[in-house]
Length: 316
Image (cartoon, rainbow, N blue to C red; front, side, top):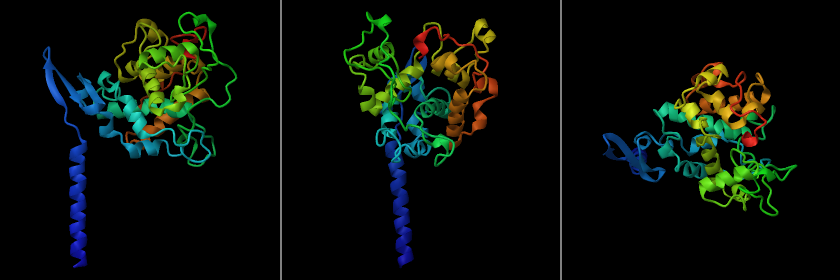
């Protein structure tokens, strides 16, 4: 009798799980615009777009995977305990999923882009080191701000366009840390939040911190240059000058766009290898596998010339 009840309970639980999946999966609303199929898919992909016809990020990247990638972020020695979570990340991506963030191409490309983006995030917010528990790559999202800034990062050159607010400090904050008044100003304009007068908002709201990072990933530093997104998913077609500068579509060029010659063109530097290692580690944890990262010239930027040499501060 007891065995029978156990079997019935198991069947009931399975039915609940199946029904729960049906309720959480959102079917796209489809229409044809100028002969092309576009879709809308719930809160996560709410603008009609061809990309919303594909799987959205929550279809293939869920809470448990986020927890695996950032396993040590809430340990007592971390510096942003309780700040970062999956809900903040997935909410932040919703604005750009209709633009192709995590929704370009098939499921594998989506997973690779999420791993690439979070590889940068993990590397730039890590407090891991060689003998850290769980290994040095398990400590992403340990920080949400620079702990001991040695500058206010106020560039008076931009005093007419992005004037520094009295008492404000524009040190590194966020998932892909923002520095300098002009970068806070540009991000604030895009996100419709007054970050120029209130840069501290980034360290107070995890969703906003992720939104600023996704905006940076999706936005070119300058006109006629690719965004990190376009360089990664293959939307960008290199010019002859790009080819001569050894810039090719792939993860390596995302580092060039985001950090310039502080990371790229320096050979196999520790700073570059740290970012690459996070990306490869996350590919493994997500079940894609680091072999999908591509060959050395695609994966790294060790031999690339910078899009914007360090005389230009826009890559800071």
